[in-house]
Image 1 (cartoon, rainbow, N blue to C red):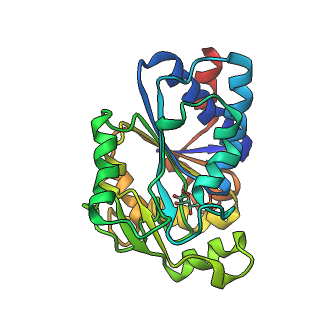
Image 2: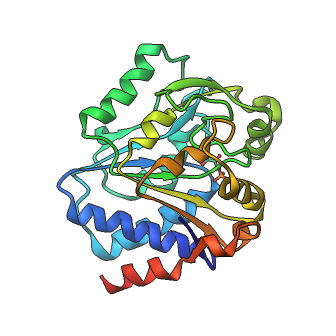
Image 3: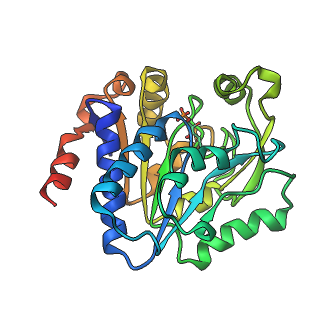
Length: 258
Ligand code: F6R
């Protein structure tokens, strides 16, 4: 179901509150986390709320979706650096419970599979956060990726390289490959939030709403999942059919009752 919120900050309020609720209520929590511009307000509000609530994070395990291949460890645009900057350095997470696929060297098939198996060994992902690429990718599963893939190496599409080169000094610095959790892993998460904010996401969200389930549009796999909420702000909702959307306030009211 698509939920339309007035702003990206409203989505962040809802998602961060849901994360805190799971932290309070589950004995062990496995979070699936994403990077990118969309997630920044979510992590910022999560940190603010933590400071109010001061709950324990000892039982929380975090797995990231993806990582570029070939950037040196100290490069500021690795997703490991992003996670440190926007979330991990601010809160007392247990460091050896924070996992990212390794992109410093080309990962072997066994390393890739090991990442998926590690998630399974902890009982699977309880809540997976996803952003979406303008081409419909989730994680770095580009259009055409098999729905049956687990963690694997991908060649980034031209569109993704163009979109993400904004974070690099020039397009040549932008990696050509990445390692990503597969669609089979993602769809096994117990609960999924897909977030899309800003007018640059309006076209793909319209396409996603109208689409059948097809490997040409990776995010369409989410239509198979029983517990997924697609959270969009008004700018990203411009091409959605309002008859097939609910107002985000329905979800916000639920958290405010807690
Ligand atoms: C990032 C990831 C990607 C992004 C997507 C949107 O870990 O998996 O799928 O979520 O490319 O990126 P932003 O939020 O920068 O528009």
